[in-house]
Image (cartoon, rainbow, N blue to C red; front, side):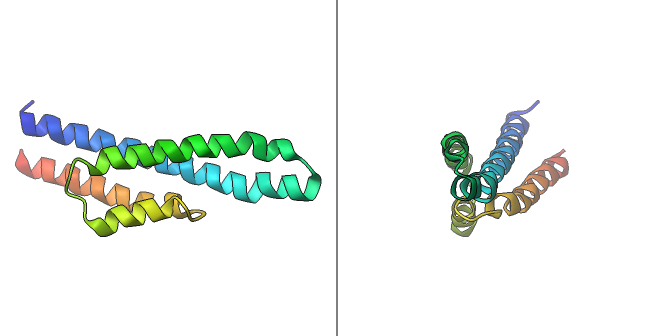
Length: 116
């Protein structure tokens, strides 16, 4: 494996990890907002937010960390970075942003096949 192929493989792996982190962050946000918060306020189940809040907080920090680690590699437009950051604050946003990440993965994989 050449150096370029190794770098490309590492970038692909990083994109896949970011996509997974986006899914986890998005799902935990939706669970927090649509299940835990209503359960707390409608049924008096404060434990729902006491559990789901920290779970989502950890998922959010993990996503932000993964996003920073991924975009530090370069080849990201400022609009893409802004979109991925903003998506973490909107319900279903991080889940929908996985489409952008899949397109980036496909483009990177296609570029690797064209080099061979």
